[in-house]
Image 1 (cartoon, helix red, strand yellow):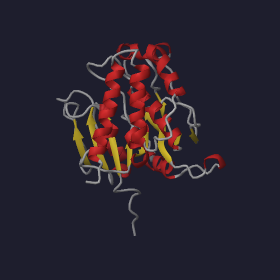
Image 2 (cartoon, one colour; image 1 turned 135 degrees about the horizontal axis):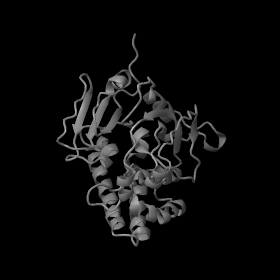
Image 3 (cartoon, rainbow, N blue to C red; image 1 turned 90 degrees about the vertical axis):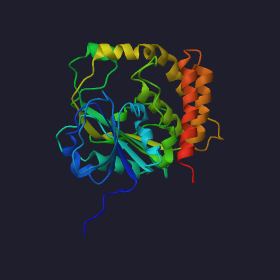
Amino acid sequence: MAQSPPLKDDLDIVIPTIRSLDFLEMWRPFFEPYHLIIIQDGDPTEVIRVPDGFDYEFYNRNDINRILGPRASCMPAAFPIWTLLVAKDPSGKEINALAQHLQNLLTGYPFSLREGVPTAVSHGRWLNIPDYDAPTQLVKPRERNSRYVDAVMTIPKGSLFPMCAMNLAFNRELIGPAIYFALTGNGQPIGRYDDMWAGWRVKVVCDHLNLGVKTGLPYVWHNKASNPFVNLKKEYNGLFWQEEIIPFFQSLVLPKECTTAQKCHIELSKQVKEKLGHLHPYFQTLGDAMETWIELWNEFNSPA
């Protein structure tokens, strides 16, 4: 008797894309049993075809910005426990990245100091073209990552990490409200820091709530570098602001009353406005948006 795929009714796979989805054919054995949330992150007039046979919802950029990708699962139409984001450019090699992410999430920490700690975030890595900041990309244009390390590591408590959302899975029930990407895109003074911001935030919340974060396997293949000159324009403010943002997160202490991801998120929104607001009005707007996000989360996820 054939076994049902793990977490078949509790998993959403979120795929932001700016190009053809033909690569889904390579992933069909792994993705076809699950619900896909596909977000068109490019020209909304361009037609993107989804191969036949997949159960999916489709949104273009006019409907939902890429930074809302992980939040798509909060909409009334879908209430998964687990959410997985996948890279735009996986290689043709058949690797079951989905199974590895699930293994990471479903296993806790057997170590004596973290016994019984559940895993909230599984952060995968990239092979081939690295996702560098623009200055690094300009001085290392030909650098490629070919080092495959067959390991999954715990990110130590108290340490931040440079999270990329293109190969990421998380337990929505444990940490979903805290998966919040910084405001970016048209009209915003910063770009390409959205998932970095989310990673710093979620790590602080996980540490406070005694939840685990893993990185390493699974790897996916990345084969398209973005334009470093375009990226530099997006990153310019962030290169200066991060000199205060990173110490802010490193020294941030959440009160013991923050016992849920929602409460942690609200406290973070207050501290963002109070301690980073002097950098730019953007951080006041961001703090307000973080509070609005929790209002929406609570509304869509209420028992009613």
